[in-house]
Length: 244
Image 1 (cartoon, rainbow, N blue to C red):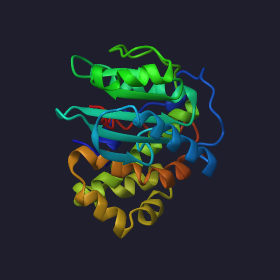
Image 2: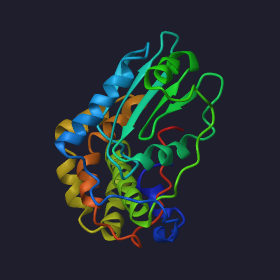
Image 3: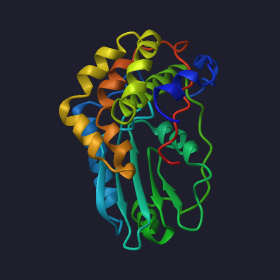
Image 4: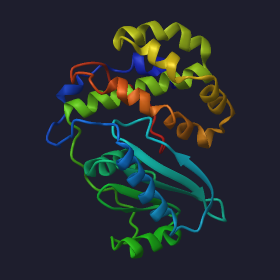
């Protein structure tokens, strides 16, 4: 089960109790310049990959930091994922959700604020072009999220889960929304404003493999709403990782 119900019934934790050693800048939304820089870096990494059928990501709907990305598919049908984040710690932190997914057809290349995942032979040109380590199946250790970043991530995941339910489980969405609005006051307004007719149609028409990317189109307003959530707020949502 996914969506709001999973989030609400998950074991409640004090998100501020997690490790708080990593630094986190005040702003979570990129400026126009930094957004353009993220997109430029995605394009640079993508240029080294022999794959087609690009699916663009405007942001990460499951993590506090700003992201740009693209998915594509090799000629033999293997997926390739490119992700670039605004802050250096974020790429390694997000990769923790990908643990256990690497093997014969999936390897990893990473920089300080980006990673590329896919078949070793497909992504290997990136390591040469970017002068980084060769493809590996090992996920690096990461600094723990700060309490504030953990709280923002939890809030964003709840909102993304609600948007998913709005499309895929509307009755559940209606029944659980008051609880979510109580947990994060103002949630209903944010969802009403973000879920325009255009966005709802895009979500309804998206195949399963592209649904999370289309949720990413909504992540900007969700992250702005969640920016000032205090570290002690909310609960761990239990939202499934997009890597699963």
